[in-house]
View 1 (cartoon, rainbow, N blue to C red):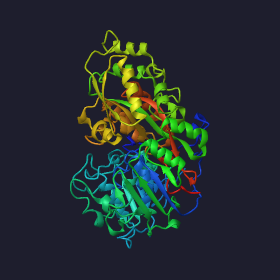
View 2: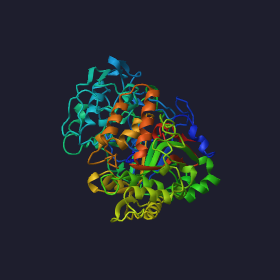
View 3: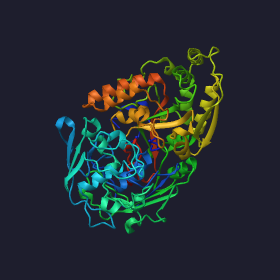
View 4: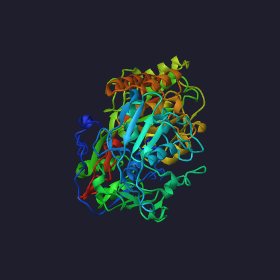
Length: 588
C-alpha cells in the first residue's frame, strides 16, 4: 500500500509514458529500456523521510512503497525482479521465466547457483529450499504478510488463513538445490506470468537459520536476517541489527554487502557506497533540505508541499522527477456503518465531493488527474472501464460536485429532504498538510447533505495501523487512503480493495468491508483467466461494476513527484510507482 494504503501505503506502486501528456512537466522517468542504468560509483546518499520509514525489517512483511524502496530492492534478491524501467518482471535469482505444464498449473523454475548470503552465513549459498521456506513463512501470523493469501492461496496445500506454526506446503517442492516446482489447484495468471513471484516473499530465507526466529507471536527474523542484495543493514553481519544502524522512524543505515557480486545480478548496479535514511522530518523541512542541499533524496512522501512544489517547478525543475504512479487516491466508506450500507447514500457522497477543489488543495494537476473509476491509467483494463472519461456514472461525472444530484440520491435512499438526519459519523485522517486539508474539505462538503463527520486527525501510520485497516475500530469514513498496484496486472488493484474473502482483522486492505458474494465470485474467476488481453477485459469489466457500487469514492489518479539534490542522478522505479530505485540512482 504507495504507495501503497500502499501506502494502503500501508505501503505506498509504468507501462510506457501515456501519462506524460497530462503534464509537460515530466522531466524524467519515462522509457522502455530494460538494461541497467549507467551511473557513477561511489559516495553516500541520505534519504529524508516523513512518515516513519519502513514498516518492518522482515522481508516476509514488506508490501508498501517505502518497504520496497528502502530495503526490498537494496538488500534482497527475489526469484524475479524489476529493473528501474521494466514493465514486466525479469529473472533475478531465477535463470529464466517459469516453464509451464499441466495447463498452467505446474511451474518449474531453475535458480542461479553460487549466490551467497551475507555474514554471518557468508559461506552458505542460496538453494531452492530456501525459497520454498520463504514463501511458506509468509503464511505465518507472526510474519504478517499482506498478499500471500491472495496470490499464493491456490498453491496446493497452502493455508487459507494465517497460521501459528509453519505449514509444509506440498504444492511447493525443491527436488534439488537449483530447481523449484510450484503446483496450483487451478491456473493462476499472476503466477504463470511471474508477476506474483516478483515480490519479496520469494527472497530466500534458509530454514535452518531462521526458524528459531519465526517461533512465537512475532517473528524476529527481520532483526537477524541474512542479505542477498548489494546492501545490508550496517553492522548486521554479526547476526543482529545494531541499534546504531536502525532506530524505527529515525534512522536506517545501509552499507555494502560484500557477498554480493555485480556480475551475477541482472537487475541492480548499486552505485552508492552507503545509503542513509533519516526520519522524523516535517514535509516542509525535508523538501527544502533536499532541494537546497547536497547528496540528498526525497523519501516516503509523494511530493513537496504545494508552495514548495510550485517554487521548484519554476526554479528547480531539473531536480524533479514526475512519473505516473499507477495509484488511486480515494475516500473509503465503511459499508457496515449506517447509513453507508445504502448504495444511494454512497452515490450521494460521490456526487457532492468537489474533486477539483481537492486536487487544488494538494498542489494541482502536477500531482495527477481527477479519477472517474478505480483502475489507474496505464493499468490493463483501464480503457475497458471507460478510460479517462470513465464509465459514465452521473455521481462521478461532475468534478466540481453536484449538490442537486447528491440530494436526489439522498431522497432515493429515503431521506425526503435530501439530507441525512442521523448522528455524526466517525472519520479518521492524517494530521499533516495537505492530507488534513483534504479531510477537512471533505468534512465541509459532506455537511451539505447532512452528513456531519467527527473527524480525528492522527499521524499517518496511526491512521492506518490503528483505525482504517482495523475493522473492529468501526471507522465510518477514511478520506486519506491510496492504493497502488503491486505489479502491472489489475488483479493487484481490484482484489485487495474489493474482495470480501480477503477481509482480515488487522492490516485489512478492503477498508470499505465490501463483501458481495457475486463480486467475490467474479474476482475469483478473473484470477484464473490466462492471457494479458483476456485479463485486462475481465478486470476492466469488474472495475466498471464495482465503481457503480461506490464502496469507495476515487478522486485522484496519482503522480509521484520524487526529487533530489542537484548533484544526484535519481532514477524512478516504474514497478514501485515512480519512487526511487536506489540501486540505479547515483551521484553525478
